[in-house]
Image (cartoon, rainbow, N blue to C red; front, side, top):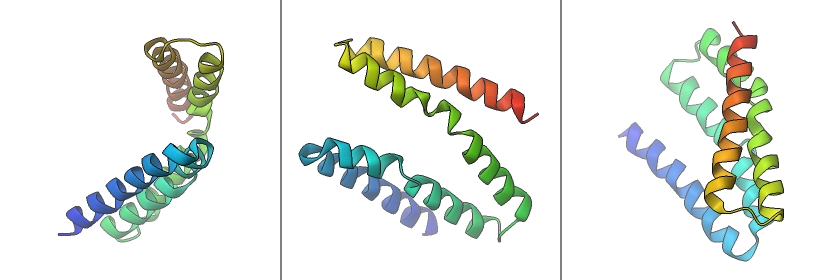
Length: 109
């Protein structure tokens, strides 16, 4: 039952962001990238692991370093401003994210 509640809440946030985005894309982007997903993940991890400090600390460290791969949005923004197609924009953004994520993993080992 708890899994269904988590799923419903997570889907509801994405659904709300999509509908807000139809009227205010900038606000939807802010809502989707703000720590809301991180907050939910932290809450679910905390409850599922009974507050295991090692897991919570590891998640927080990963989230902190995870801001490096946020370059995906910078690349997407620049590509869209230049009129690059969606497929190329996503490929470029994902490539930058992947490099940032690999760098992140290398740093944390």
